[in-house]
Image (tube, rainbow, N blue to C red; front, side, top):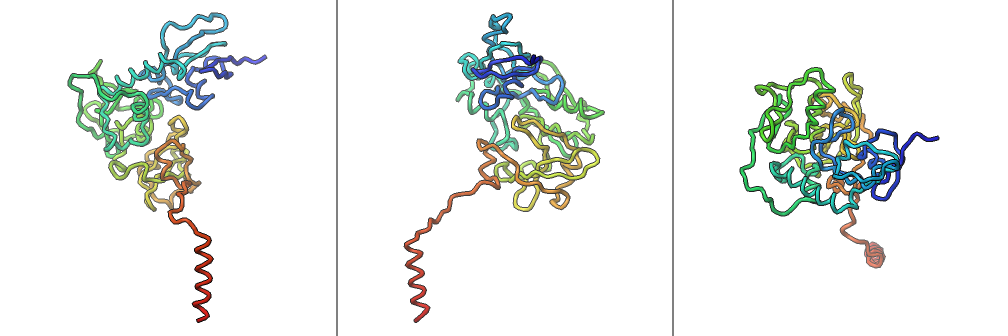
Length: 333
């Protein structure tokens, strides 16, 4: 007898382990059924429940208690029950609520995508396109912050931050000495270091990879190029500090940046050290595995190695044959 429980999401049934969250159950199905998530990160304990973009409707609680849940719930925080039925993209109520959540996130997050290094890789950019409204109803003064250097390799642009807490969790769980966190309360909350103390541990660069927006940026790559003009390549090296499995982002023969490899949900597969990220940008230092597999819906795929453009000049067989005849005649003369 199977110990797994059955849950139905948007009409598709899947069997999962007891205690699995609705979001992870949806990820096993895949496709458009997966709710968006700006704060949840499966590898970070305690993450989730901050951004509310993953709201879903539980239309049936379970086989034992089929009553629907009275309110929309955060799928990243809600566990599945046997016989549970969930609505995501099939619920107009969920879509309307998600529009409201995106509008709240955009109250203080500026849509400065044309100058943001995260453009082309930003989940909030996708959400604002899919669920955002044309004009903001917010009439008050928006909060702004000065840029802060968190050491010599990382810059914090707090004006773009959506307070997802990912960078705090990753620094707290994979490093021995976390120096940054949440300062202030309410609308005065901000990510910062106390008296702007530099973050200098060997895994500090991972806060860049987990940031879902352009709040934490790589100063060695900042403003160097747009991500869709680069070509991502998987590579690895024998690193004593981490697994050394990375993605190299090329422009021509130059490695512009190094990042951890991310899965289809935008989560890093293995965290990498600062030596791999910032100090090893020579192709000779890496074993190249091949082009990174990029989703066809991503703007990055337009410039991917596997993209083959259609020929501009089409071959005309009659004209080619006529040219051969003329060439042979001219050669005899």
